[in-house]
Length: 115
Length: 113
Image (tube, rainbow over all chains, first blue to last red; front, side):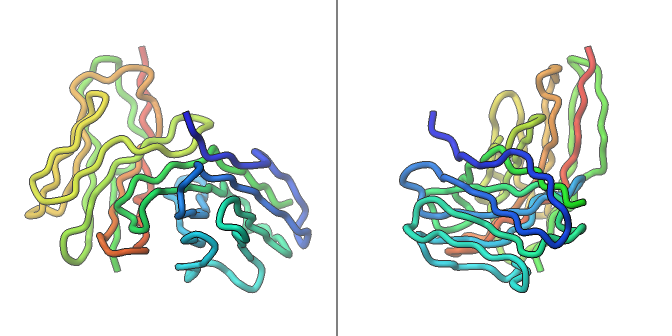
């Protein structure tokens, strides 16, 4: 069964360092999402891609976060510099549909701890 | 803006007990409604959905009915199992392109033998 792949699964870093997360969506899924999930809360959308284009990054802290999906397939989310408040689970999801009503398939996430 | 509210957890039930997790929403128009489930150590997965008023979504013994008049989408299961232990997220999405999914805070369920 096709799955969304993410790496690494866990990342520990010190504040002010740079970190990067990778996501490989299900083949053929044009829509890709990055979410941040703080412990005890629901996922919050950071950025949404349609193919290689960003269609929503309104909640992305652009002074330190960046995301790209150069060939419209896999994607990288970067934080530079990391801050203590960035400790969270970072989830990637993909979907066949452009609207949120389509089923989203989630990867296992990357647990980030900033010391 | 749109929002989702869920009953606070954690919820602890004995095996074979009846489950209800309350969910209410605030939104314009007629959004689609979802329940996603997150098992320990895994990503979220869609459990069920409903796209219009009075629709009932169902899957794996779970059910939820879209109630426009009470803006609710409560999750129910008649007899829970230990394997149902997970975090359950209620969510909504508008039907327009590129509109994002709004998730509730999640409700943790533990089922004990």
